[in-house]
Amino acid sequence: GDSVTQMEGPVTLSEEAFLTINCTYTATGYPSLFWYVQYPGEGLQLLLKATKADDKGSNKGFEATYRKETTSFHLEKGSVQVSDSAVYFCALSANDYKLSFGAGTTVTVRA
Amino acid sequence: NAGVTQTPKFQVLKTGQSMTLQCAQDMNHNSMYWYRQDPGMGLRLIYYSASEGTTDKGEVPNGYNVSRLNKREFSLRLESAAPSQTSVYFCASRDSAAPQHFGDGTRLSIL
Image (cartoon, rainbow over all chains, first blue to last red):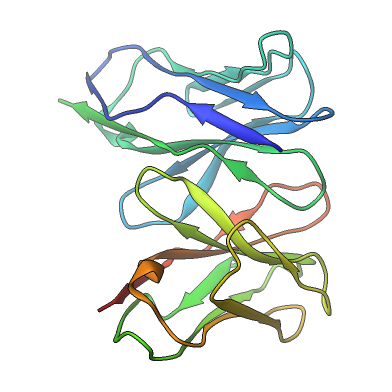
């Protein structure tokens, strides 16, 4: 079945450091890929998405590129801020209705 | 503000008690979902409703029932709560190929 594997955390960084969170997937067909972010005490918010191979999703300084050859969708940000502290989830949708999520990666950015 | 509203936000139950979690969306979305979030396991789909009048099991449906009351509302019922159902529950909705929108969650503890 469809599945997502993402880098285990927690990840602790200093402000202005480079962040990368690895995500790989297994799916039949051509899934859409997503990164969601969850701030403390809140629900999940869509951070970015990519719907086909080689697409790059970007938002708030975060980027991820849909790599079909490596079945990956790694999340990157060049200079993190304290406000980026959150839990990040990689997810895929291989049909019209359901999302499959990774386990989540907790990121803490220290001033 | 438009979005997904979940009630209650917090609840403590005793083993064996019953409970209904409520979810309503005001975005006129066709599809609605219930997930549970547990540490280290990401979000797992309990039930979903692809459209008004239909419901289907997700990954972890045992111990739960759902009702799609109308297009706006999708409730989740625990008939006889067990400690293993202690979790954070999220409702989500979407339309067509758009990403899912999430509520802020219900934090449920079962003693």
